[in-house]
Length: 274
Image (cartoon, rainbow, N blue to C red):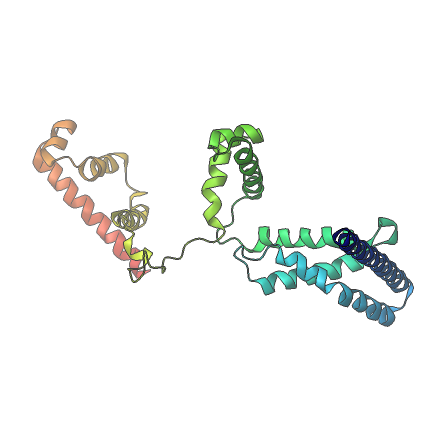
C-alpha cells in the first residue's frame, strides 16, 4: 500500500509540475504577444526597447537551436550569432495573425542557420542542387539502413529518391567539399604533409608556356610554312621523311626550316622588346 501511495504521489507531483510548466509557457507566450503588439504601435525608441526585451527573453531559444548544428565544421559561436540575428529578423517580421511567436521564430532561425551553411561554409562550394541532394541522400540512406539492416548502394539510393545514378554519385563525391583536407595536414602522425606526397606532370605547364609564346608568332605564317612546322615538331618526322612527303630534297627542307625558325626568332625578339 505504501509503495502504491508513493507512486501515486510521485505521479501527482509530475502532473502538477507539467501543469505549472504549461501555464508558464502560455503566460510567456501571452506576454510576448503583448510586447510585440505594443512594439508595432509604438514609436521608434519605444519599439526598439520592446523588441530588445523580446530578444532577451528568447536568446535561450536561439542558443538551443544553434546547438543542434554544433560539431558540423562551423564554430558554435558563429552559429549562435547567426541564430541571434535570425531571432531579430523573426521579431521584426512577425504579425500576430500568424499565430504564436515561438513556432514562427523557430522556423525562421532554423532557416537562417541552414542558409548560412549553404552559402558561407563550403570550402569548395558545389551547385545548390548538389547540396540539396546530399541532404536527401543522408535521409534516404538512414531509411534504407533501418529497413534493410545494411548500408545501401548508390543505385538503391537513386531508386529511393527517384534520381539519376550519376547525380547521386556526383553528390556523394562532393561530400568532402564542405571541409576539404588541408595539403599541410600530415599523412600520419609525424609524417610528411599531404601536399608533398602529390605529384603531377610538369611537362604540361611547359607545353602551355610554349604554346602561348609560339602561337601568336605562327598566325601570319602561310599554310606551307605551318605544315612544315607541324610535320617536323608535332609529328616529329625527320627532314628526309618530310622531303619524301613534299617531293623535294632533304637539303631544301633543311634550308626552309632554318629560314623559318630564324623568321620566328626575329618576331619573338620584336614582341619581347615591345
